[in-house]
Image (tube, rainbow, N blue to C red; front, side, top):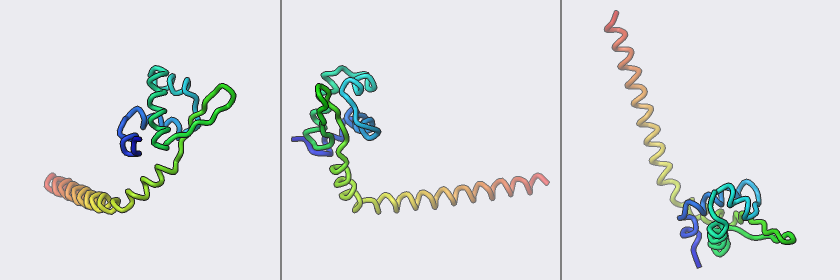
Length: 116
């Protein structure tokens, strides 16, 4: 059985999840939107279903696929412990950009004063 990480590693499966995030969809609709063959979409949906990321709801002859957000919430909770690493880097990058903008303003001011 494939893990959540393995299932999310494939860009086509991520695109399917993006589409299912909007609303439940039929295989035919996903086929049209992704421009992939029906067997190809069905294969990807099977992987997502086995990983617990989607569920199927049958309505007569139609099979509606819908996102199961619970595994993604679990993944988000696990990633929370690592967010501080990124936040510190983003804060440092923001500080650096602010410094560069201030230096650029100072340079422009110096050039204006030199032109007088």
